[in-house]
Image 1 (cartoon, rainbow, N blue to C red):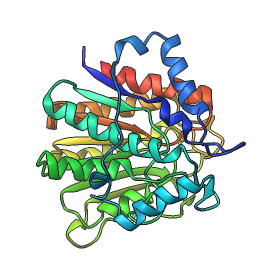
Image 2: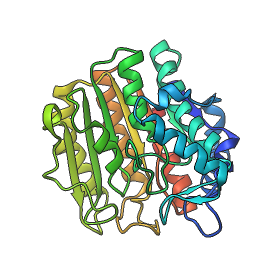
Image 3: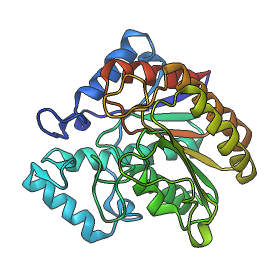
Image 4: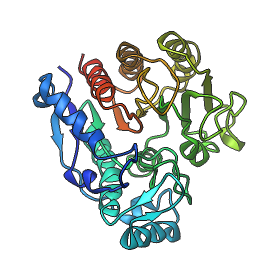
Length: 312
């Protein structure tokens, strides 16, 4: 059986977005409760993430931005934009969320885990280097990619983003880098309005961004076609040494914040495709990081399907 880590910390529940906000602590509680109910919780290796050192967050985010987020959290609750809230508990939560990804990468590099799932909040993929947005403060996956390159000397990192909303922050951070392949499926046109198919990267990174816009109502077949026809040929040629997944589950057919129609089976099959790619290219090394997913029952079931596919 594969050694699959689960990164979680109670501080993630202290990120307070206020009443009625869809990105709420109940999301993580629903995941944890469901994994216990179906007997998966005890099959996972627990990770207890510490707060990421500021110098590692600053691999992506300028120091002035990091200090501004710290101050906004201290003053909180503070609305950084109409959707994005910083509260007194957000500073520790965001740093530990980044720390979870860093710890998972270290464990994979040391060979003590085969893969890991980071059940974190706040999410990260909308945060650009100097702007919080879309519920996100720090871009955990982008920081993880740069950390893997700088501290573990990896030359090729693949980021797979299947959230219903385009990871505009991640793309903006990595789109000029030839050493990071970024692949995204997302509803389009939709928030945040980025991710057109013709956006393929810039400069040295031209051709290293693969955006696959999906029309409202697209489901498992369209998602899996994008993985098979767009991701796999490019990724097999790229041969990543590590795969990071921005694992949003808001493309689920029951999710209230999008209009796609992916099922738990679709997430499981997409996971298997990525896992098979990882087995061929990088000894199965995958770090999956929670992004969206706002229907509590669908979120729990989708994460279950994702983790079972990683464990196979």
